[in-house]
Image (cartoon, rainbow, N blue to C red; front, top):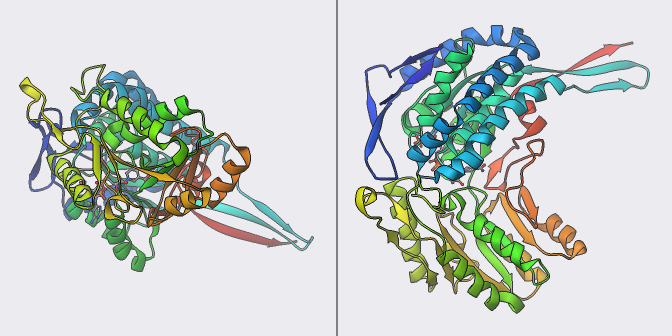
Length: 479
Ligand code: NDP
């Protein structure tokens, strides 16, 4: 199977006929090849986008809404094929792709398609002297670069608001998980999306991604990925005065107070630790537990984690599928070796899992729980982005807060308490872009989403995304 670029409405190989191999994490076997695009392909895509953008903007919000809704309907029609593809390409349980990834991708398209119909702009009357209104126009041609962990979910989270406001897009999905974006391109053709409005260029970050970032005609970059890559992109884009939205890494704390609903907390903390093999930027990887319930939590949590089933992503009963790539598996195992060197005690997991039969070469890992490490060691400071969590006890709220805020990241925090005053006090003091209280991954697409500190710059979601992809102009009329 060939995964082709989508440029100017056509599915086509990269220029020079260059290809990359695409293995499935499920069995480690190559099942497709990907167009290995370079700067010349990005140039073609930008040219197509530049030609298409004025017509797309002129179509008006109703016309763009209709096109995005047609696309959403086709993804919904083919939901099962998309879920199977996402599982095959990424290694995630197909049940998770069915429940989370694909429904959310459809919601992203519908949410921004309708948001644009309801969006207003501000007006300011100036003391009877003048009236001001704000006009918001699409910024033009934008670059959207997305990661491998939630492939179609994050891809659509970027392209949908950009297209809704009237921008034309050059997008690059991760080379590790390109399949669902390719399938979306096929549906774009079927939906009759005007050629050039959305262009999808496949290939590596170093080649295709870097060419998008550096292209002078691309006026804004929306990027989700690692903090180091975000810094590299900012180095190139900032001197060109491009608008930048960076959604980066995390090292999220889960803070558990003794007064919480223990059973609900336990169930949700297993989920926030190991969903998608721990490969969600919002997963809690540092679990801080009030000392009075630490031993009880440890015993019950480890028992729940031991009961999780690592297995075939296609099997409905699998809790953890494969991690995304062999190199990533080795990276996560390297972090576990480091944790042991730092004095950490592995309570469960800590090793690769070899399944039998045809899946023997797949990249599976046991969910891992480590204790005995302080807040400032590398294990508790660096993002691992795999099925690994640490446990740390705390005595006071101040200590928990200082520990939770002690990393360079600030993406999300999870707080478990039934004390209403403490909820607000802690939520205010936690330095993260999202604070979930007594829940995890409960998302309302209207809310601002993004990270503090080195977890990002800017916010996505709702009107924040619509604003990012537009330029505001103040028109002042003297009365
Ligand atoms: P990477 O930063 O490695 O890659 C992200 C995307 O950027 C990929 O499409 C990649 O291409 C591309 N890329 C790589 N280098 C460059 C470059 N020099 N110029 C332009 N583009 C480039 O992240 P991962 O894919 O490994 O994703 C995991 C990371 O993403 C984690 O740190 C995680 O926390 C973060 N993340 C953050 C989220 C948030 O909302 N804050 C949500 C989800 C993940 P390719 O892969 O093809 O090389």
